[in-house]
Image (cartoon, rainbow, N blue to C red; front, side, top):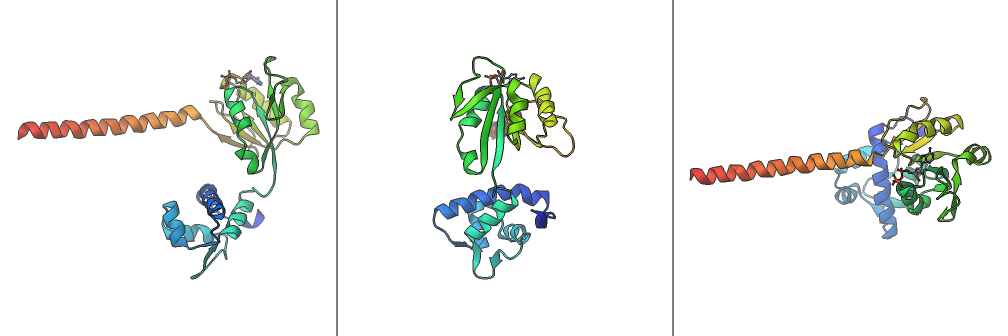
Length: 227
Ligand code: ATP
């Protein structure tokens, strides 16, 4: 990772998309691809692709294209996907279970090592072979198992307290699904997924385009009347 310290956040944000497309190309048996072909596939300009991928140096060769597997592996390394992460899920409600049941994360190296809840009805159940443990066992679990990432899928009223407890246990990364901002020390990473905010953006854009359609329709009617 060290040698890639100067890559801008904007590029880092785009890397998962490159990684996904390159993975699909590997599955299709494509060994090499030119920036032009990749550009068509990803709907990004070829110059953007060259600029982005030049950050890592030496991936592309003039007239030869990119070596898909090499590029995929290098981007994987930059994204830290060449190792395994131990992830716990706090809150075995609908969302926590959905994440636990989604096997694709594991394929990328995110291994669900523990699931915790306070509800006696779900404690002791097992989700894809991982038992739901009582929150009272969290400290003991953390002293015996490394926790790289904690997915927070508890109600927002509980999320802050749960995160504080995990920070005290040395957890340095949170995948926060609770609809609340977590205040954590500077060296702790929080990636929040506020599903209802995503829906609000969709509803905003939908109503905006409906308004525009309405205005266009109204404009035509008016034009029609004038004729
Ligand atoms: P979801 O919101 O994930 O669809 P849900 O509607 O079933 O789940 P929520 O009330 O959102 O239930 O709670 C999610 C889960 O978090 C529940 O299983 C609940 O028991 C659990 N939970 C609530 N408080 C805590 C806590 N402090 N620590 C751990 N788990 C908790």
